[in-house]
Each structure stands twice: as C-alpha cells, then as structure tokens.
Image 1 (cartoon, rainbow, N blue to C red):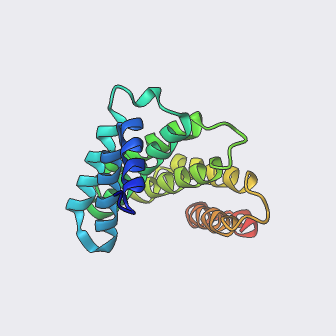
Image 2: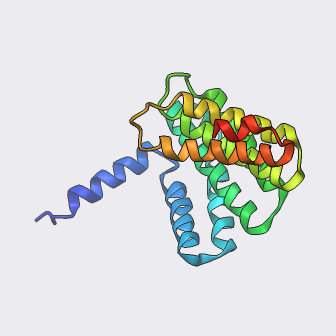
Length: 185
C-alpha cells in the first residue's frame, strides 16, 4: 500500500536527480533563514559557502540562464549582508561584481532587470558611503534611474526603486550641494 506522501517523495527525488544543485541550494536557503532569525554571522558564512559551491560547480554554466541569474543575485545579497555584518570591503566588492555580471547577462526586456539594477545601485551607494568615491555614487544613481525607467508605473516595486533613487540623489546633494538633486527627488 502506498503512503499518501509517496508521490511527493518521488517528485522530490526526481527534482534532486534533475538538479544536482538542489541539496546545496537548500543548505544555502536554510542558512540564510537561520541568519534572518538571528543566527549570526556563522549562518551567513554557511550560506555563502553553499552558494559558492553551486556557482563554482563545473555544470553551473550549463544550466538555464534564469537559474544562473537567480543564484548570482542570491549570492550577491548574502555578500552584501555579510558586508553589513563584518564591514569587509571584499564582501561588498564581490556583491557589486556579481550584480554587474547579472545586469550584463540579463536581457533588456527582462522583468528582473529593474531589481538587479536597484540591487547594484545599493551596492554602489554602500561603497560610496564607505570610501567616499563620487564615481560610485554617480554609478549607483544611474543604476537606480535605469531601474525606475524600466519599471511599469503600476508595479508594487516602483516605490522602493524611487525611494532608492531619492536616497542616492540626497547623498549627492549633501556632497555637491546641487539643488537640482533635491528637486529631482
């Protein structure tokens, strides 16, 4: 007699066989959730290690491009969170590099491009806050502007992207004193 759970278990086994990254991705997501529930920096390290195992796997580049982009973005988010936790510039540099890669690989008409541009803008603005390089702030504002321009007016994400752009413009006003930045907000 088959148990009620057997079809589910069979489905999971098929998914794991079809995706050699399944278990490692689950480890990354579990560690991320543990971090978000107060698990500390060790949980972040575990999540990043799991993401890196997937990203460095020889078969990763043969996977679906949307799958690749999702994992690149997810790993970048973990590096940014670890930067916020430990303030290591190498983590921030990795996050920015991953988002730059994701933006380049994303088709211009993809609905994911706005989010990736906004994430890139946030990484660049964080680096500006740390190092004070105006070029990082300028590039971050440009990424935010592109995110806003590519977002439909009825998107629930638009207020977030507009807020990010406004924050970038405010930072630039505080640095340069140009009233146009405040009026653009």
